Amino acid sequence: METKFSPDLTTTLGPISLKNPVVLASGTCGYGIELSDLVELKALGAIVVKGISLEPRPGNPPPRIIETPCGLLNAIGLENIGIDAFIEKKLPWLREQGITTIVNILGNSIDDYKRLSAILDKADGVAAIEVNISCPNVKEGGVSFGKTPEGTHAVTKAVRDETGLPLIVKLSPNVGDITVIAKAAQDAGADAVSLVNTFLAMAIDIEKKRPVLGNTFGGLSGPAIKPIALRMVWEVSRAVQIPVIGIGGITQWQDAIEFLMAGASAIQIGTGTLISPDCGKKVVDGIRDFLRQKGYKRVEELRI
Image (cartoon, rainbow, N blue to C red; front, side, top):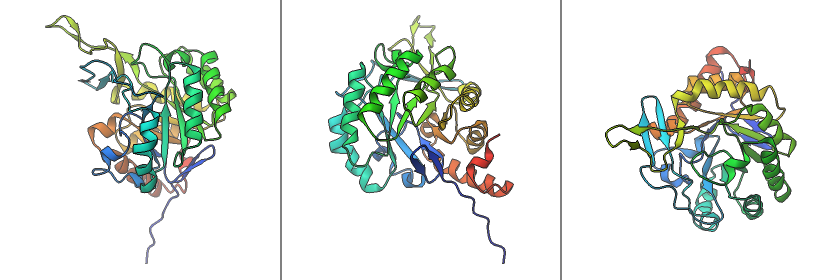
């Protein structure tokens, strides 16, 4: 009787071990509970919850999200409930469900990041921290740190000094040489880097003769950015010794395979989840089937 070959989908991000390399990106799965009726979250490697700041944030004025011919343009502005409400109202549910939870943090100053890290270090149920220094939809704060290696190093080191939790730094594509930024994060103690966040972009309403988004500028995501994101993951994975998480226009399993071949140890799905909530599970199944079909025993064998 023929036995179906069962490849090993586990992957590691420094000290974190994931059951498979598929992660839902911050800002696209809320705090998990919002998708729980539509998605089997425990079937995924992990989820990254919506970015959390010290205090609640209302976000940018509407309109905040529009479709483009090949992706989404958003300017949510990091709306969130704040760290205290997250720990009190959201984290217990995530912990009870057994969902591997990565918490994305953001701030206006290095001290904000330090305080958030210290709080999360004592919280039960946090698998890792993802430091957001790359969101293009706010006028101040973390994005300015992510534009330079000095700023990236300073924030990363400040967080590293406050917590023993695994530390991921999320990088912006809106820089000159992203490998320099990635090396700065590595040198400051990051366990992994995730890339890329969205590309700064805009749209104009020609009838009303004004920008469409209430914030004027937003972040472009989806299939339009995949080839550029893939190139950056290729470059960074060869420039650093820590794991890379690939992000950018992954909507089907074939996209994920490309990022894993480019050098990513895991991938995050963002816009794909908004298009099809069960996209992540389909990508997990597609990766498994591809490995089985090609005779690969482990995910890392995909790397070129």
